[in-house]
Image (cartoon, rainbow, N blue to C red; front, side):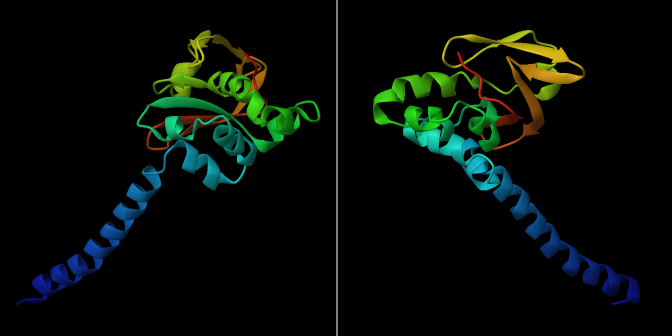
Amino acid sequence: MNLYTKTAIFILLLTVPALAVAGSYSKSKASKDIVDTARDAGSFNTLVAAIQAADLTDTLKASGPFTVFAPTDEAFAKLPEGTVDELLKPENKDKLQSILTYHVVPGRVMAEEAVNLTSAKTVNGNDFKITKADGELMIDNAKVVKTDIMPSNGIIHVIDHVIMP
């Protein structure tokens, strides 16, 4: 075996495991669904609790695809005091489902597509308004603050207010 062959084998032995590790990292990251992605982010605790209270966990873990306009914990905190606690009560499950499904659009809507729309039909059957104001993408009264988070079963766009049907 010449030096060139030995060097090539050595490089190959170093590269293949590194590629395998990188590939498994990408795969594991992409295998998280909408609910797991939101939970693991740490800034959607209220949203995840609401999804659970509304019995929408299985739906948002399904294959989809769905586009979720996800309000942060800070967005939920902007609601009048006591609103979240009231919505999480079992007797308000239908209302909570309606609010949460107003944040979900069937299919995958990337940010570059959303900026060309004026409205979108949500899973709850109502349309929300999409506008561009001062260079910001708005969904009803909520500003989109982060776009194109890619869980395995859709897309998440982060918004700064809870939108109401």
